[in-house]
Image 1 (cartoon, rainbow, N blue to C red):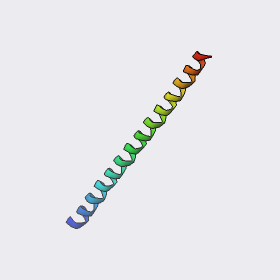
Image 2: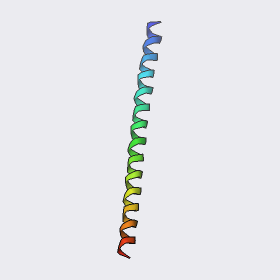
Image 3: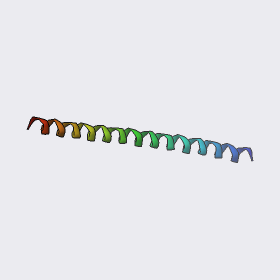
Image 4: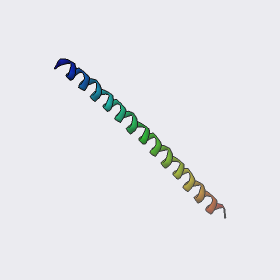
Length: 51
């Protein structure tokens, strides 16, 4: 019973860490996309102001 519990605990911890890593990567990706879009929109507005 103890061995089964240890295996489950290890797997659960690994799944949580993997989920956290994926979540962190998604957040970084979203921030990069939002930052890029914001820079692109600001650039468009600056071009429109110059015209």
